[in-house]
Image (cartoon, rainbow, N blue to C red; front, side, top):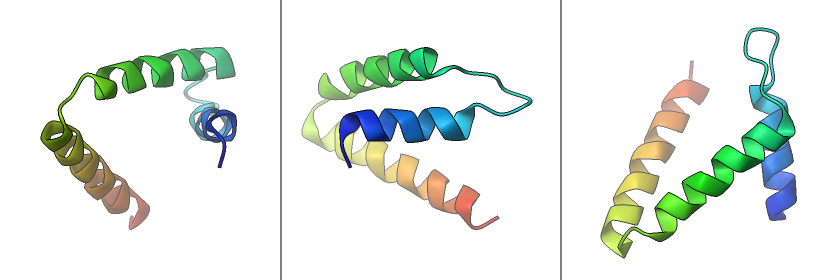
Length: 62
């Protein structure tokens, strides 16, 4: 998956009737999130990703 595809998929999933977020806003937020992640050391990055994936799996199982 290309980064643009990733941004577009996230944008598609977050833009709902209750939460209207356009593609440009989504891309900006994700870009800033990647900026934060790139400043982390490897251990913090791995811990953050592990926790994020655990939360995502929990949401997916509902």
